[in-house]
Image 1 (cartoon, rainbow, N blue to C red):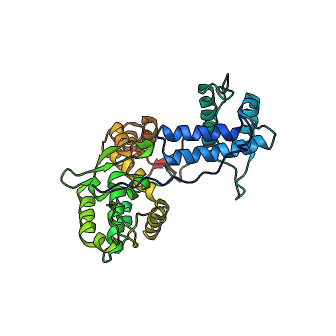
Image 2 (cartoon, rainbow, N blue to C red):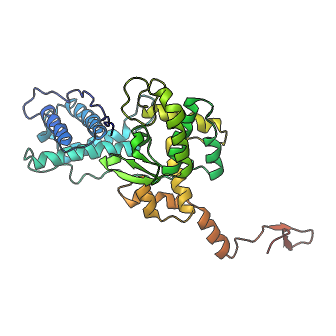
Image 3 (spheres, one colour):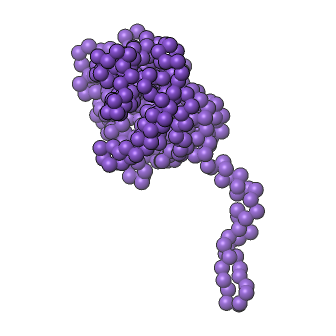
Length: 346
């Protein structure tokens, strides 16, 4: 089996003034090292680093150099600061971004107490901002999905590759990072499954994949991939024109271009297929827990949002049971005080 490439570790700059005894710099470095030793993903560690860097910079600007100098009122001041701060484009931080930043800070102080660096945790009772539960902005119908899938020029090797990637996204609901990390050996054509290794939270999962998506993958492997595999081949399934593993941001842009080219009046990229797969399967009668397994959600709560998007069954029930659902609107007649229903009303 080809070796799987690991996400490269970024060189993270030091946080705060490392020369201060028992200062933020020393403890933040130890905390991030502890997270890495506990096998947290590099993306998680990078996000922790970013959040702690912002917090420590804010503290040091107020002459707070050590975690022991931080109290709950200070943390509440920082929370208000996050609410009022603006990004480079002038927009405020979203409540989700504020929530993520505060969770990282809270986790840092929780760890400090466990290390006996602090006697108590000033962040333990910090009230985090409520997160809005928003529905996916755009979900494709089955017809719209087919229109997007037909956009790549399958007379070229790149077009065959792109069609195989779109089919994989639509059939499995995989995340973009999971698609670009696939090895060709992860696809089991006989069993009709795909093994997703180290998905979000470093969890492996096995998901089914449809026959048509497998057909396009097999065509890509036979006709297109050999011409793209230049130099050392590490077994990555989908390759760039340089024979390298695709970058997740590039895949987002490529899928976005295909959605736009389909001229369906909707926008989106990789996640639109994830939303579409979940919604259409629910409308087809799939159990929400099966959708949870497909999407790789750790919590059922994350999956239940699709039960609100899947409106077709609810509309059918409404039509069958609501006494006014089938009534046509009333229209005025020439006779005062009388009205009649439109033709065809029940």
